[in-house]
Image (cartoon, rainbow, N blue to C red; front, side, top):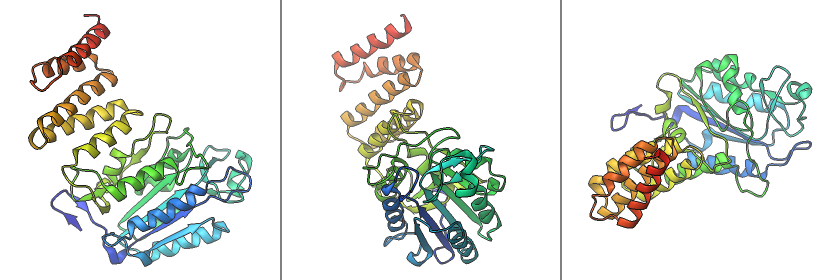
Length: 330
């Protein structure tokens, strides 16, 4: 179903479902208790009072006992849900001898020569999703090397959102309640993103799921208009500019260029709706992030424009102008 307000695609509740897999109790790999917490919290976010998935349609699998158990659950879900099917994995990722991604299960061994035998090649999941009757198929992978799922031959018709690129590893400190990627995604699902419309889509999640500077960069591969698929209602107030700025700042520590774009959008929205001093603060942030993203000339031009704002602190503005002039050798 399409929502004409923001072109979101809303899963049909009675015909959509999800399989959420978390592996935390490893025998030969570092334990990840946050993986088990993460899938439980994710199920709650998807099936809450205003959730788009029915509770009975979301299956959580914690520390699967066998490859067969996991594949049977995915196959059964594929048969039951002809509209939208979501597969989510959080745990460790391994590479086999051919460099293909394997999803690590409790007994998996972290050796390329043993990965295919002791772990689950992601191609087997992608093949099940490919053969599913669902109109829309989604796979979200929170594990190291997860970007390698895009190499899987059967993944071409599935929307992919991965926590890392092909060669990146994920920070997975054992003391965290959830893994960094899943934790950030849960924050967005629970609290929303101001200004993006009434539904939170896969494209919105990808755009706003930045993290700390030492976190890997998420990747997305959409199929046709799959980025418009909604997972939850957007639970943020539309004009909560402060939350948008907070999210953009978090993203900027890893991706300054993306933060610059997000602040530029925020400046436009805040100009008409925010108080003058708040709108000015976003203009200043947008200018600084533009410079941090590698455009000192653009940053200087924006700070020079801010110089004429009666709300601006003259000392702060002139200090920033001098800084960017020095960077340009002016």
